[in-house]
Image (tube, rainbow, N blue to C red; front, top):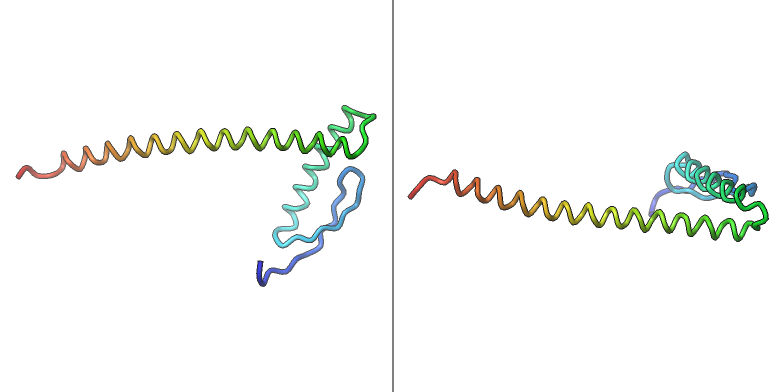
Length: 103
């Protein structure tokens, strides 16, 4: 983004201190990092012998699964909106025809 200044944000994810550059709301970056850390820690607790790479890969698979589910939900919602829009268009057309004075 042109003209936007980036600020440093310090976060800790899976015990690793990271400094990120954020052009948006730093609180949002911190919240996202916290969510990622919670997910990784949760996976690490359930698989204590897994190394950090395996934990990260499992987290990526989990997030990809969530994303795919949300994309399916969005697709269904879009289809429903299209259907309802078509139904409303028909009803509006009928209402307009009924409101026209006879010639």
